[in-house]
Image (cartoon, rainbow, N blue to C red; front, side, top):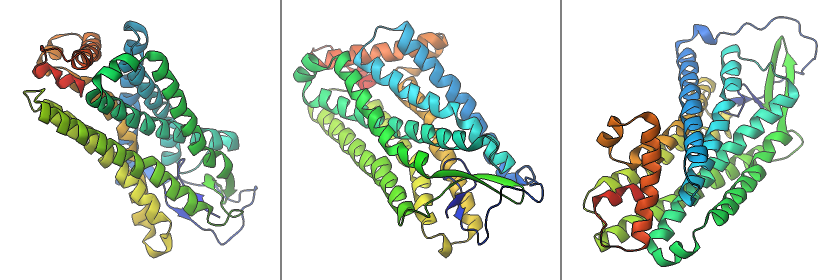
Length: 344
């Protein structure tokens, strides 16, 4: 069996050499609050929950109810919904990490894990779609101006969510709840499926990291080369924004996937190191839900101008300006200048 201390496989999975019993013989006493590192991680994830929940809720409200619906606002709102739901389920992880046991039952064990993986993959797929959309807009401006519609963007978003559902199904299939010596855990049970653990971990690594990262990197590399060759922009801000987007994706998700791959050969590593590595990997992955609204909204406009305005005006101006800049680029007007940086 493959057992996990945490909700989403972000903890070291180990094997027990004894049987589980429904009747407990003693009460489990959590030690997390007595360990500085565990306390720090709980506080960090709680902060991610609060900031990500509020930040993405604000993006959803502005892009969904305060602005005209466009392709750009469709991307923004879909990405924000994905990150919002991810953050909404973080309290289950926080409670599980602090109490060091699962108290929410078998159904929620399967549901919470599946929903969180659903949003993890949907967020990643949407980042890829945004990258491809911007790349196509730069390479084929006339075609993009004629074919970029809200209806088509909505269909693409639906496809992303369907693919994310498919990738999240293993959590519903393999997650189980068992109790031993007073401790109830939500874990992965791969005993009936040979190489099930390896297949799930490797598929998540390839589909959820390697392929998306390569696509994003290629798209933004093409954008940089195209803009430089056409001398469309005068400032270096677009390159900084693009570098931040690629770096954020890479740095947030790499620790998680590396830890999961190391866990496949857990017998070769110190158990405590794997536990710490997997918890840190989860924390950095969760932090991506905060960085997305920051990088895609707040960095899309001049900071000084946004600083003088209200919080709502900041976000509305940033997203509206990107839409105006995209239109200017697609129409190839001569008015393009350094403000085109918000296109990126």
